[in-house]
Image (cartoon, rainbow, N blue to C red; front, side, top):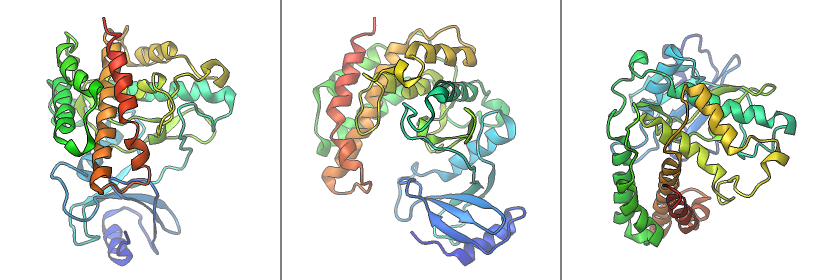
Length: 339
């Protein structure tokens, strides 16, 4: 997707402080949902995230929401995010809405086993991940101007209903016994106490953060497309569930020797998150893990449907799609552990 570099440079000169061309643009390989580009000038580098061209669902590809949450957290919290420079809602500049943020130089890691990190530093890197998510969940949404960023009540019930509806309506992707059981089981086992709403990332993974190249410190959290107000424990469990999943199209930690890898155990990881989040414990963790696996199976099921209809664009789509049953079975097995 080529951009009109001359129009873009003119816009940035007017709206980004200290911007000075000439400008060169290169698209990153990732960012399938919202195409992402590196903008380079002689003095600085920036990152641009845009809506994809074409007819889109009204609520999808909301780069304005991404910009808003990054701007709010950067101005009013200790959550590490790139500096947000400008949001453009004039589609005549490059054809779609877009925003521009700081380019953060550092390490992006792809495996939760942190194999790219020297073994003696892996534990500290892992705990930095947990601490950063806890920092996000401690932010008061109202204090940073995000009190209306989502519906504060009924998050879990709405999530279960949403993913159930999408699964049922996507006939092309097929039906799976474990998913059918979970759709009935999950609403009946909601936690008795609803958590106070927090800002949730929605897709917090090791490859969605940038680490300092020398220290076990998170420099920036990326990809805020799914951010909203919701249950922080569901957000944490979706991140934690890789401890309970085998290596599939996404690398899990189940069956891997955590001690030999230099990683914290699941119990240590949960304890560190709780300490940083100011929680004594997580009473309903097993339920949240079952829901998180159900949600991941729902995501894979949706990809499966797009593969069946011939509309999947990602090279890994078929790989994700073939794991629907495995993840759904893991979710149903996890549900059986809930007392």
